[in-house]
Length: 419
Image (tube, rainbow, N blue to C red):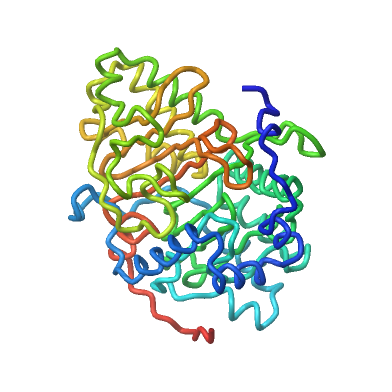
């Protein structure tokens, strides 16, 4: 697909939605959405999300029952002292009001209120397009200290693409390179569990620490379009490797295996049960607020694949674990390999070189999804390769480091949130 194929689907900027994004800031835009319910399908989904939030956290499972004993406290060599120092440096630059707003208790259920639409549905912490350049720089230094170099580069690229989208739709008050919130859950510590949420349109990272161990889950990364073809960041592209490797894996299967892996032939298939597709998540199952989703295994087992195909699966996981530091990433890969006999790969859509598609790979300790979407800001009514959503979940209570938190020391709240 040509780099600029998305330009055939640029929207009419005179429609009310884009006029609102041009005139309103993020808070006004979100308040108008909550009050007037436009677009109605997204507002209905938001109401459903709020209902899901009332459920106590359990985690993604295959049958509603959490499998115990899957996660252990371990030394991953994470540079926790440097990370805490970077977090403290960020906090030291905040006003008293900002300091109050950026901290939440580690068990606060609002950790689960991240979301990937451009609407600021949950305004937690501080928003980077509303703070000083120095605070923004310290925030990015913190992320660079936490993430692998290649993972940090991917996150920055997603933010820049979001800024580019804002320019395309004349909506930079809502969508820009810095339209992201950050907040802490628990106090940054080298000895006690804590974490942070960094979230906004098409980039949501939930990160947990316990001593030298890190969990980056759940996370969501998307792009519409997934390439910048003009301006100072021209040539920036993300999610193309995940796309290439997934298609290569599917095309490498035998016709019989492809038939078994392909659970639906069409991206919006009449055979799909009610709820299997929705306007926002489309084919995704484990996006925002889906912390307790029951997702049965589908498709074929990785254990039944050839060694070359299993290497492709590991290459895909490598891309999805890119945010992790290298040692943590390898330890996660080793954990995943130990579950190859119960790792499943499934596919939706066709699998020609130009076809849009969805795939999922899951086992007891990881679930990843990839989906080509129809237009949200662009006008393509059918899924296209220039609009991509990806996500990762750690099933059976692993998200937000929950399974590890229950093994660590209890966290006493020695400060009071005054929200």
